[in-house]
Image (cartoon, rainbow, N blue to C red):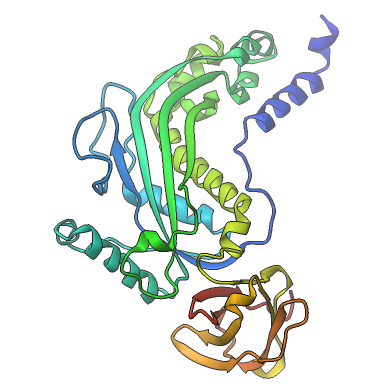
Length: 373
């Protein structure tokens, strides 16, 4: 017997390394942006058929049922919820807006009315930003073995289950997500004029490596894997479609959250929206005894032309405090909002609205730190 076969730790470490390499990308660790973002349900356009043009909203329903070919059946609801969950890592708060009970009523509206509808829903939710996403999807799935397939042979000699953890088959598809972000601190007639980014964010998903554990279902194929290397089994199954239907939205959401954090400056220091920047990473909103909340939020003037004018602190639609900024020159252009507020224990977020001398308004959302944090 070879030393390789006598040392099971070696292949086990190899399998663990392969599993780590194939794990989904994590969102870079960073403090979330100080905004409450509202997500419009994601439009899904099937690029393999000629139906509506990409400019027309299309909201896909639940999967219709099994098909002979491997195809993804992504619904607007499932994709939207996955994206909203992942955006929660990039923003202080993320809320998924709901389609109306009668989608036909929304479809009958013109573009301006549709924008106004979603702005109203976002403000009702207390959001600072509105995100519109569109997924262009070719749902056909093409699978084949990859370079890790050949690891099945030495691992199979150690026992069939050793092959289960190798992502030995790759499945290709085409998915491209576009995201536009708008400031909705106030209502706007033309939403595009308040876009935070000149070019929408784009992320793509083109391939996934799946293990036998991801592909297989049923006791029969597992029993067969004791006799045949698992890389040769479960090549086209409903489990593959299910795994991809869950993985694609999640990974697109993670990539989108990572891009948002990479564009942090565009969100926080955007002169087209206001001549100031709230310094969220230096802000402190801490709950003390007796329901008291201490607030200290620095705000940096980005231009003397639009010097800071006024701030408001609120919880939901309730105004808690407001004041004009001092007319005296700021130290290095930096002013500080300070307040002591009374808030019930169940309140988790504090809203901050800042207005500059040019009447530009931006709203922010900060999480209230508990006593234990």
